[in-house]
Length: 402
Image 1 (cartoon, rainbow, N blue to C red):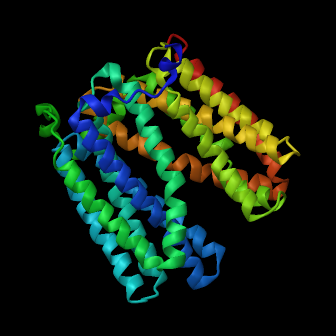
Image 2 (image 1 turned 60 degrees about the vertical axis):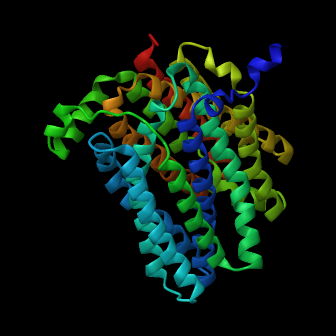
């Protein structure tokens, strides 16, 4: 009986048809998109044999995303969120079909790959805030932690399955097959999303304002909520200074090459998956900001300790512990945001969450990469983790009463 409270709570899937459709639509879509995420860099490297061209894909995606995310949040609070999701997924399907057609016809164009990847990222900046705003309308507040754990499981499961699936498709059929699969996943997602039933009433005062005024109003709301602002700061601090994935190739080279690289990636995701599967206890604890900050600090500490390890298996152990702590922090952040942010602001703050979620790891990879180039990968991990702990603590100090 005691063990049951640690098992992941599946009741949102059982009790809410709308949440169930939302969950499986995003699971299917996430796997399809993750397959494309593997395929685009592979195709660019195959065409150019240049790591620099491959690395530029991140910039081609980040810039459009930064442009659209805040405006996407405004749209999610002004219009039907379900229709917004369907429109963006429909347009993402068309862009993915462009990738599939070009690959099938062997039309080799780097600018086209960058452009279509940028279009998909731009649309994600509109799609994700609307999706974040729909979720709280499908489950009751007391089930928000369970929904957060299920969202984490969806991401970890997809992240484990998709790269292997992409590799099989690319090696046995060709890169075009990955894009066709992604397009089909979008269509399946839209079918499920079209059957989600939620009630959202646009505030008359918001509808009467211009889009820019809505955005400023959302930023003003965020500034008045120091607890939410601190939670964003904690997430960014942990990612900017302690995000290790860019250093995995260097660490793998020191520990056996390609097989070691696979183990490093898997260790993080295995730790995260264990956190989701044993997440039942996360529905009860109070003082969620303490859990958010504490788990983020443990993530930074484990990354720092990983930098001290000469034994590869101890390195993997600390990476797995880091993945566990990161997912715990993510589940509590998910619960905290969806329970405390007013529904009429959920879209706009969802856009800000997307920016912090995406930009932190990219900036972090650049920071740790520079430190590692000047010193070593282990040194970058050690000092980056320590700096992350200090910044997480400073963010937590802003809201000691929660």
